[in-house]
Every structure is written in C-alpha cells, then in structure tokens.
Length: 280
Image (cartoon, rainbow, N blue to C red):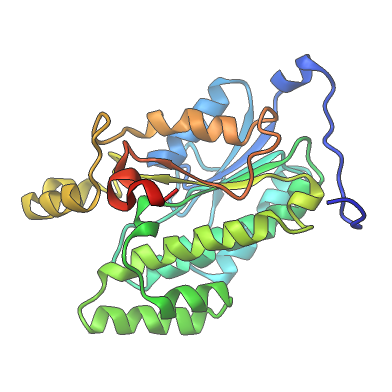
C-alpha cells in the first residue's frame, strides 16, 4: 500500500535467512492445536513463548483471555519475554462452550491478542499473524452477537449471548464468536496497520479435531451423531492437532509473502459439502 506512513518493506537476507530461528507467541499452548503448533515450531528450532490459562510446561505466560486484565497481562508479559518484538503470533486459545464466555475468549480474547501484539510484530523480522477459527463460522449465527463483537462492545455481545442461551439457542454462541473473528481478520488484514506494515494476517478454520475441547462431543453418542451431521468430513474424517500444525507453520513463516486476509479451511472437505461450489 504505497504512500502510507506505515509502509514496510519485507526484509529477506537470502535463502539462508528463511531457516533462521524466529520468536513465536502461541496462545492456548497447554493443549490441543496450540500445543501441537508450539511443539512443532520448537522442534524446528524456533523460540516459542506459550500462553494459556492453565499452568503448563508449554506455557510461559498464564493469562485469562476472557478478561480485559488477562489480555493486558498477555501483552505486557509478551513484550517483556520477547524483548519488545515478536516474529509471529498464533491466536489459538479458545473454549468450546455454548456459553457467553465463548464470546469473551474466542471473540474478544483472540482479537485482543492479535491487535495487542501487533506493535511487537511490527518490530519483528518477517512478521506474520494467524487466528485459529473454526468451520463453525459458516454455521448459523446470532447477528446481534456478531455485530457487537465487531463493534468492540463486549457488554452488548455477552448480553446477546446470554439471551441466546436463555431462549434455547446456546449453540449459536460459539459459531457467532468464530464468525466475528474471521470477519475481523478479513477487515483488519488489508489495512495500513497490517498489510501496509508488511504483516500477513490470516485464519484457519478446522473441522472436528480430536482435542480436549471436542472430547465431550465425541464421547456422547447423540452429540457425536449431531457433530457428524453438522461437520461432514469426507476426506480422512476427524483430524489430530498435529495434522493442522504444518499449515499454521507455513502461514506464519517468511515463505508466506502474499497470502493475507484468508480463512483457510482445513476441514476434510466439510465446507465444500455444506456450502457447495458457490461457497468459495
């Protein structure tokens, strides 16, 4: 985006620089997809600063992203541990509850992670950012929840989520938080603060992944059947967290120079089944 005050030129130092160790911040690093991503990156020689609400050997920062205070704590400790800079951020922390807390964590927590750490990325080398969304973003949602999240009005979003639960539509809460997240990514990615600063910002949308978050759905026969119907995955069925980590690795690596503002479905074909050939 030429002519902007935040314009940034990608800094590459030749082929060897692409293999150089980078500093990543990964939320939700104590389990599931976050842990798989953190461990893959560590195994590839990168430094990973893990963050989670739970104490874990994979998380150096313990913060509750459902709260304003926890989000501020994440940014403060990340700045300290990263020495004022980060090369990549993966916002993976989330909850699988049909409860207003899903709006606070999956919506506001993820957005605050990305927006709050953007200045550290701007100081990094070949900076990249990614949110872990969900196929649920294409499911039915509550427009009031989505609009409130995008407006940055957490009080209104939580109230709308609570109303949905009270009228028996709690299933809409999780999907609405994820829909708002991917819409925020799409909006933000092409702005001066992100694209203009040379920072690709994307999201991935997994189908069903075998994690602690999905375990209650898969262990209950009735919920399992409903899950199969709402998330049909004709290619290889359910995924393991480790099968998602390579895609996250690529999208947050220096090799990704032009993919931004995208929601990459890694769902065994579920989105293509649900939305057909017009859904792209």
